[in-house]
Length: 341
Image 1 (tube, rainbow, N blue to C red):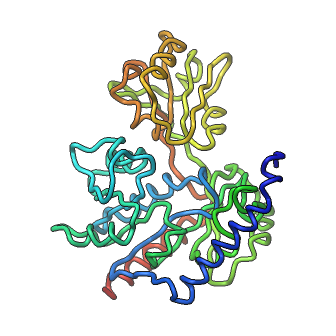
Image 2 (spheres, rainbow, N blue to C red):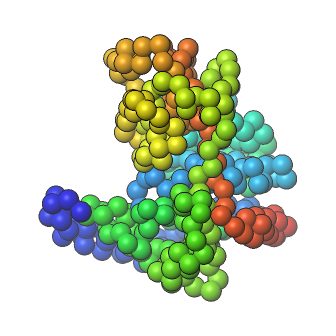
Image 3 (spheres, helix red, strand yellow):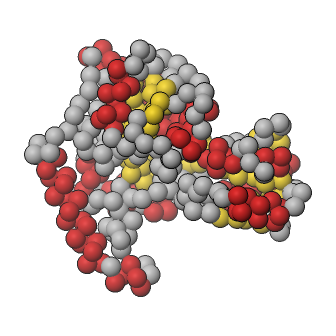
């Protein structure tokens, strides 16, 4: 913990008190939460950024979209539009935000919407001519105005919520007790060979209740990188001189997976909107080398002056074990909720 964060510790206590009061008011009904007559699954975290929400949402889309009409609803972080927006053929990352636009580009059989007011967003989705049967709320664990039917809490292996402190001293958005709202907790970004003993040790630290399930996932990288015109095998590009470019919260594993020799790694802030001068500088540094970026960055960079040499590496969330049990939890909830509605 750096010195500034230590100095700000009194503000962390104040922030924790404010969020605790807010949660108490929602828990006791003083502040109203709204429920809806369809399955609503909220994916989120207790800390800021970098827990792997996007690949987890994509996992749920793959699991559900062949059986149900699925919609995703996000805030649309750093988008240049306001209010409710339903993605269509004219949408782009500036209008939707990079992650929702990525969903729209990859999954043609779902609806993708953005609205900072999740209650209004759900009402808008349900009022259209083709309403969804399941709604996935992206980054909505603290959005208490909507009461989801199922909560999935993510926490990254290298930054477990149980070892963290409140903002601004730490990275927690609310106190650790917020985990009590979760039906499922997933430890993300684990080593693929994480031992059972270490998993059990983490489970003890969490102290979850008997009706909460715990799972462990790792980032599974694709074997291929993609551009607008072609694909290349990762094994092939690892041996090439290249530039690696990332504007995500925690890019270290992305760089480690691809970097060889004197490859240059450029890091930008999460959800960064690249200026023309930055694009020119990147192109000048790269010369004629290929540039490999993350899928989230690619949706913002495609069509730019980097397009001819730009590739992206897709990722997905994979379970270390018990994937069938996780799938069963989700499918049972959605199936029962759909019948009830």
